[in-house]
Length: 591
Image (cartoon, rainbow, N blue to C red):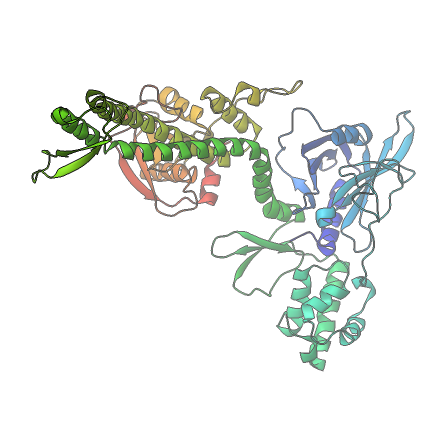
């Protein structure tokens, strides 16, 4: 759900208590829609994430540092100029609006103390971050809004900042329960109660409106015409009780997850009862922890999807071209299987030279290859002699025979190439940061899928450091490593691992090479099971159950001469069937 004004008010209250008096040490822009303020104060260092992503506008603290581009964007540079070193005086929210203001005490270019404001508008697709000067003029914004984009409100450098247009709704904290029910009585009797509340109350999300309706009547979509006097009294009581909790700062950061798969569903600032046993509720200690749990994993996947879009498209196009080429070669190979008929006709022409003359377009001959010796009609080229006609058919036979040999080799090579590209597509989906992508591009350049021009760094950009394999430690202390790309797979399996280590890979499913480092010890059943789960997790079958995973000592794994990166063969192995558990695997992760 989008962050509604009520929940945002609770977030702002939490941020103000933690950040008031802190200084902004650093400003980063890890993505086009995100700004990170690194602050330091009495409570220590904190990182505040401000995101205006259309599907996930939010503000909360993050623990780990984000990966930043080699060259900071222009808005990031401007923020560093005006905000870095500033003291956060206060964080406040205009009444029931989906926005808040960070008040900053800083100095201007001449060293004179001044105030600046960072307006954080978290309003879905209209979200924005706007830096304003002491005079109220816009210094700049993360998204500039000119007259072509909006005729009502422009956000451009030099213009005075104006608040977003007000909605035609009532401030819920200026209403009582009795006033609200009076307004409901005047509404369209066919309107459902939750929709009527949504149309009246400023800052309330559909989830909160449904919850108020459910607390009052036990039915979230009951039409107004069916409400009784008892229902109206219950609505007034439920509304007054909720507003009292908000005014008193009695919030409950609640995450809703689906019971069947644990996927996040929604979040709220108050306990949610409308879904009954269908959803599981988890209460967090802070709204930052709640928002991070709801958005961060999904947001990370979306950011990487944007970054990998061009690379994925290039590899997918190469894969599709190759698949079409293989299909055409298979069709051509099937046609060569009838080549014996050309040799047969050539032999029949040779046997009947005595009755053929140049200029004839056909001849009837006895087919002695057939047990019944029927007469067949043979087509001739009138421009050729009888001997040349026979040679023409022999040449067609030899051509088809040679084509079969060549196509068989080319199809084998093509199938290997197709498997390789499929493995790269699977690895692109697993990339976690720019280092992983840089190494994938390097691998694709070495194999000829990408040209050097496509992977050349822009001027002034540093080359990302080499990515490291995934590192896990089993419950009983064995180290497990998984490759992030095919170059790492080769390095792990063929160079780094000891011959006595155990190698894991999903059976006939694209995935990472996984090495269980035994260090001269006998691996436990627990370590073997967890290593197999890691192999299943780092494959295209990560969401499946009972995934077949082959395992064998590293000494049994060989790489054929000339094989693509990551391609190996093994003949002595055993197979385990495991179901990957993401939560359990993440607990084993070292780095």
